[in-house]
Image (cartoon, rainbow, N blue to C red; front, side, top):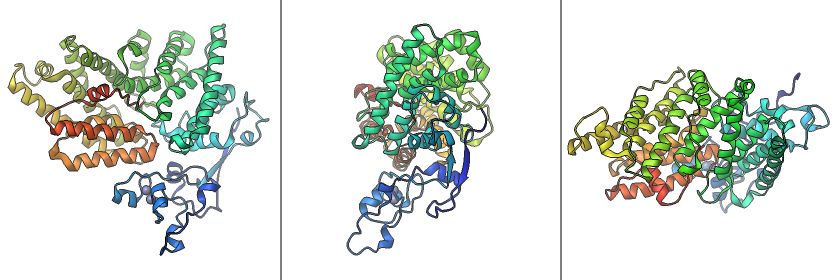
Amino acid sequence: MGRKYCVRFINSAPEARGSPSAAADASGPERAADSKPGPAAPGQSRQIIRSRFGCAECRNRHVKCDEAFPVCQRCHRRGTVCRPRARPLGWRTEIPWLANPGLNPPWKTRPNGRLLQFWMEIASHILTMSPDHNPLSFPLIPLLAESPSLLHAVQSVSAGYEVFFQQSSLDLCLTERGLALEFVRKELQEHTAGSPISPASVLSVFVLGISASWVETTPTTYGQEHLVAGRIMLDKLLRDEKTRSDPITTFLLGWYLHWDMACSLVASLDGLLPLDPPEMGLTVREMQSSFHPMTGFSTELFYILSRLGRYCRQVCKHPQQRDEILETAFHQQLISWQPKCEAQDHVDLNDAFKYHGLITLGRVCGQASQASLDWTNAPGPTAEVEGEAKLREYTLKCLDATSAVPLESLCTNYLAIPLLTAGSELTSGDLASREKVIVLFRALYSRNRLQVNIWAIELLDELWALRDLGINLSWMELQTQKQWVLQFG
Ligand SMILES: [Zn+2]
Ligand SMILES: [Zn+2]
């Protein structure tokens, strides 16, 4: 396809601070309206309010923001939620045919250059673990040109991300989402009429699905229709000998496994398709020790956790339908899980998810189940005490692993689930750790701008209040009671 774009550093932007890569993490497109300083409060000098890219909280208080990312020092000290403002990049990618869509590749619809650039340089990075070769960034361009639905889907996320998906300013995001849905219907009709399924359309369904809950004001949806449609389309790609080995199918499978794993903890059972067609297991085994941009080195672990999630949801609903052989198998698979990588952030992420699985299994399936596992053979009060001690050990290990992942690592995009699971086990004696969990959830919000992190804090506050009264619930159970759906996919 030849050279599609080039990167140019901007010399005339003294306000863009830090290294280009740090800026890429931290910033967004410059918006003229945003860079006007607010009115000075009485007694404050101009100097104080001149941080051009400070967070919303500091702007409201008319104080200078140090712009630390993802949480500024003042917000950190105040314990407020930090919403950093979009900051210009220290570099800009120049895409000649984006400025002039008449050039190649031929676009089916005219792209919004600003949103598309923001997607590729910033917004696409909240979804993956791959900082250097993010397939959802520039490599996506040929598919975006080919598929109007995918183009509008990513533009929608880009527009929403810019405003923290806040309802008051979501217009552009929702308009783009509406267009994406309209086009995806058309593309699927073309497929039903006989043309082969396009990976670009499958990607659109995925982007629309994972972002379905991002535009909601309450945690009540996980984009079920997209999850089911995405899965049916993926199965078609996996069943076809020709498309099965295509890198894009492998990419979609890894993405699906993470999405499904996250939904398996919240979805109603009839909303999920079973996870064991032979093609899927086979491909997962082929992928098991290689790096995947959407699952890192955790593809197989997510696959196990998806099945565990389904099982635990079933036990929540029908406690009499327990299967102790299956529980033992889950326990053994998880306890013997070893991360197949050397990068420390990925090792920590693997550990965090491993202990999340063990805690979920132990808490949801209860003490009788633990008695059937390896630490004791005799159910009864002793087993219960030992079971709780084991859960405590997993909780601390899960929390350690979660907190060990540096905030700069893209692995943080995946931390919310283990953080919530470990956090929900903390007791009234763990006040400092509870506070640490809240601080980390706030930082995750400042980083990926998804409201689900704030809802997780609300759920934790309720879980802790119950726990302090002697009622031990898993977050899975409490959110079901509240009819909440926390979608971390
Ligand atoms: Zn600030
Ligand atoms: Zn702040």
